[in-house]
Length: 338
Image 1 (tube, rainbow, N blue to C red):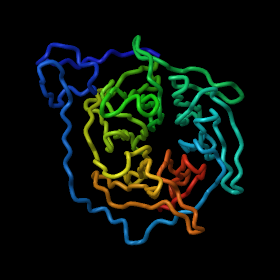
Image 2: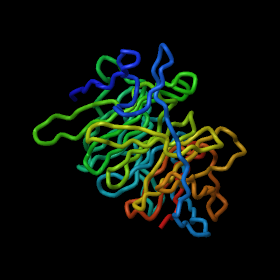
Image 3: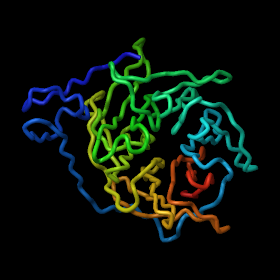
């Protein structure tokens, strides 16, 4: 992996701005010693009609482990989850509700995804690395540092339609937060025209526990959950290869967003993580304009309810449902969204 060095530089301070998102036209605030990014949020009314009926919620599988997280669709269209306590990547048979271990990372995986070619990549906090896993082989380290700085612990990984990988680097909960906003978001571009893969930071050591990440279906935007600021960030490129970032949606209540999935119509489905044992599991729906338009309580018709510790979400292979993991009960819930 070839590293690209951030080129943004603060003219006010004369210091390198490696710790800032790569935005050449973003407003800067000069504090005399540190230069920080000034984010602006604009709330707009949404014309998106979600109707009055609440989506149907059902139990897709149970008994998956109390540290289950990061549901994802593999290269064959099958549903998988990971267990951060055991290191297992688990395939879930939705027709029977049964599960089986596909592989073990040997660490503490908190996210996984497959690229357009069907190759699996695992964000592993235990190894402090992004791992790659080929069928029949043990996972191996794919990337564990930028320049000479080791990762804190990659949290979640996702791909866009072009094969570019995006991953968050948060470390375990508590290592990066409001008091220490040193989490990062990275991208690894897919090789093309004979060029090698390129690793570059989109937001370097400036975020409060960045976790969930997802790309829009057309690749235009990348969304990141910044849990400890309780908000969703949106990244875009202008020009190509230069990423900018702003606050897309500010949430309230709970600890903050843990994972995000983007529907074909542009809606964001966001799981909210909380530590209040009396709180219900919530999925917040955000319109393509960044307005919260619906909150879904994750409670199935059979009486099974999710705890507030929701740890992952993904679209189904037919895009008509989302699957949500409950990291407290080990239950995988399905929600019809079509």
